[in-house]
Image 1 (spheres, rainbow, N blue to C red):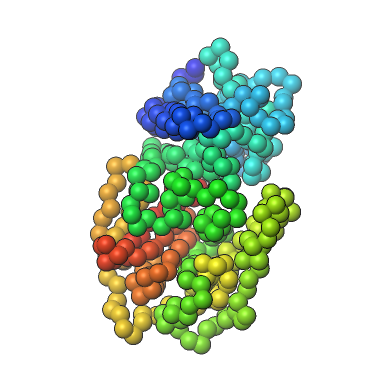
Image 2: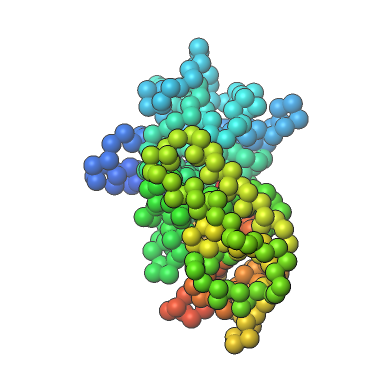
Length: 379
């Protein structure tokens, strides 16, 4: 193995190794098949080291965007094989980056005689396969494919410069953690591409990607109580409610595996997520019917102003902490917290222009609003 000059790689790799070994061993004990091989810490360290330094270079004026998967060519489905094995080096990664920057393309990396090499590319990888993504200079995200293979990959660690953020799945075991977040943490994750929770994850990823900031309110179906917390008249009412996304999700299960159906779903997700960039809140029911966008949130007449929230970030070495609402964000965060404070059965999702993403829900046991900072789960 090569010499590691990125010290965060050396610090994080043993913990990441333990995570993948436990993950795969638990799956094997439950009878799961066709699982990826867990990389050891030396392999993880070298992959992170090479990817980090490559991310700081440029090819034709552009920073590399790379996804690396640790698997043998035999484990990949219809792999694109290079005629010669290429060394896993900073120079090679930088040169290859423009050709593999599209979403869903992974550079395949494997080990032979103690050396790591790049063998080609693949679109399909096995369950729990180690994946490393570079989407911007100095930012490394380690993740794995979900057991069911649907939706966003599960993040394990985020490294940026000398900062290491390790995901703590224990936060998902809090009794009042939203199912949206337990799915991101891969706890009782949805097994269907069209699962309602999975669709919320796709909406969150899209909201964060448009980089304009946004606020999405998820309210109970067949209820109008949420209107008590919205300024009337609505600036952009949708009547009748827009149900194209709901219609897609209700289609026969056999349709869901077809590329055309999945493309239609992504388009509908992008359509609704795009509206969250408009100033104000977008309101959608849990039945996926769109009610309005650009709505202004107001405190209900029978409640008080929210002041404190319970702030949670699902990372190692962090604890839930009570904060004043002004400590975690600006106008959108205050509006989201106030809405959930008034509407206990609602969920509020806030995307910030700086990349932060916060989910608000009500905690009956604490009798206060919870704010989960989850941008590390969405990268």
